Length: 170
Image 1 (tube, rainbow, N blue to C red):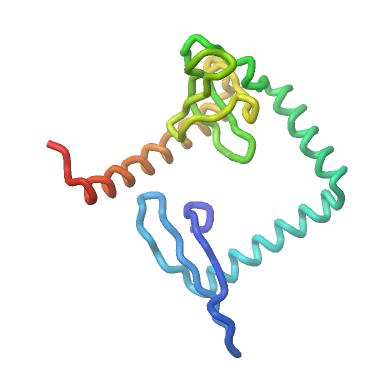
Image 2 (cartoon, rainbow, N blue to C red):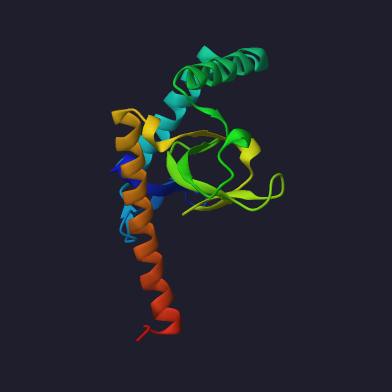
């Protein structure tokens, strides 16, 4: 449940017996309450991940080195700075720093003032890496398809919500 939801967990107002409460939005848009046990497990998982990061990268220099190692590995896997992406409107795979997804996009506009467009919006090429679609590994292609499916479900959920506000189209 944790990896399939976007959730939040927070302590209720402080009291002598603080209870934890939380909620999550499932991929199909349903808002669900989380049990206190689930909230505690999410918080424990966050604490474990933070402890691992602190152990593995105790200093800024260590974190910079890890970032450079990841960038070097992505270079080895064929990912290139998106400032070098095709500017002819053709599509390519894109990863954006700060995201765990692989998306399909294209560059629209005149260089250097254009942007890369994906279903998730536009982004500046300087914060991204690209790879030609025909060069994706099977694993990368599978991740791209998973991200497309997630995007599709999100847009379907948003369209249903928009229809409730402006009325269904005919």
